[in-house]
Length: 181
Image 1 (cartoon, one colour):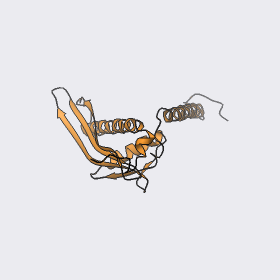
Image 2 (tube, helix red, strand yellow; image 1 turned 90 degrees about the vertical axis):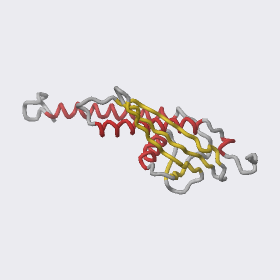
Image 3 (tube, rainbow, N blue to C red; image 1 turned 30 degrees about the horizontal axis):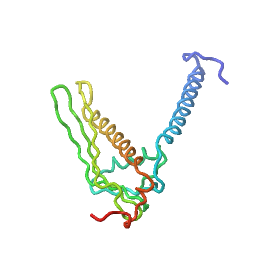
Image 4 (cartoon, rainbow, N blue to C red; image 1 turned 180 degrees about the vertical axis):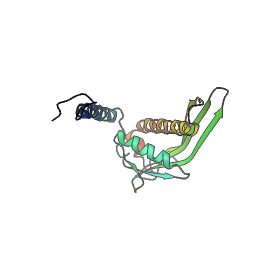
């Protein structure tokens, strides 16, 4: 048991570590509570999850971001066979230099195919942008990587929002229910 609380005395580290442990426990409790509340914010069509990921371009970073974000809301996105297919057709980044900042952009074109092979969402384009102001003391590559991570998170949330808009009837359409084009 610790008897001293001063950090400059032998054994004084104990109070410091107890304080850190208590702070960590509070933080974990808050995060767990937030995760629980996040699941209740979205309501998805029956049969949407699990989903399988397929990409026509290199979009590995986007896959991991979307997989982790979807998991927070109770959806499963993976690479194993599943009934619902999320397919990424293209992923484009942009970097426009302005006089005082750069505008970074990320655009993904994706589609959703249900268990019956019906395209529920066809070639949907989702785009997000952010500004990047650089100063001499900031590592430019690190700042760009951080901002593109932020953009991937925003893309994941926008896709979630569009998936939430699907009704059970829309998601579970059969080829017979789909009008001929």
